[in-house]
Length: 101
Image 1: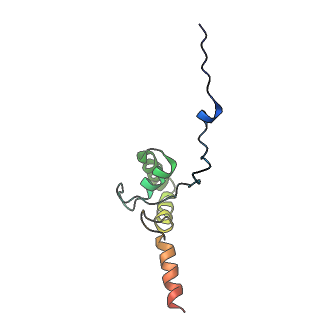
Image 2: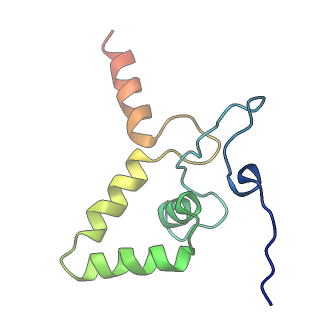
Image 3: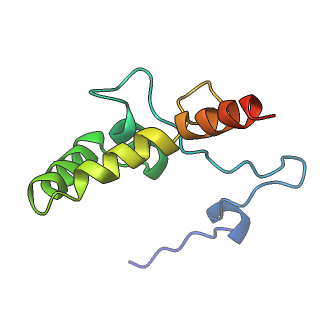
């Protein structure tokens, strides 16, 4: 028995409607689900994957070659926290620039 159902192409695509502007998801450090600085949870939320997977990858990178530690520190400094517009590094640079004027 062969049954087919008709699906229009509009039903299967996830394109934004003309009345709703496209809003890309922003990468932010998590405030609620953090272990250290929320970098792993923020990356997991941005990529829509399990936070445990991101934490395991960062731990493996930290142990095997040490690349995970500078990567995590860079994420902590460069990714803004939820609810804030500026990252720690951007905030520091702007405060230094304001003092030099």
